[in-house]
Image (cartoon, rainbow, N blue to C red; front, top):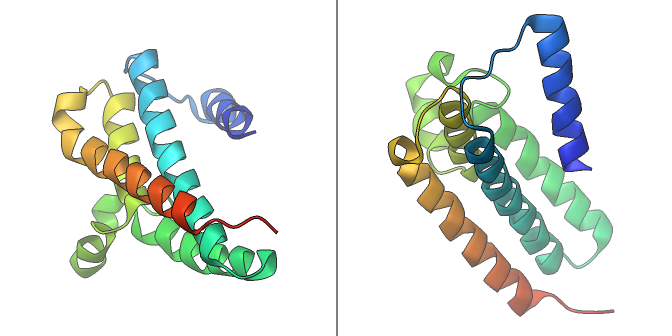
Length: 137
């Protein structure tokens, strides 16, 4: 479902706004998968810690919407106030946005290796904690 959503988003961007692509398709796909898996793992962690599905959904939304606005996903990173950008550095979605923006524009993994390492670490930690705290009912 995520891949279909991204495909439709890129298609609309290309048709409606002359979206340009200067990167390597495989690099962007790899960056997208790393970012998506990291965010999914965070969702699984929230779900594994929440006592009910309703609480997990509420907590997820309470965390997701502010994260979108301070990460550069909804508002360009460059126009955010410096204080918000400092807080945003601790948000995993910020690193996913930085990684994908750089790779989309033709940058290399070497230029955004910090974001890649942060996302990979976040993925490993969230998966490990999710596995530890998940319970079948």
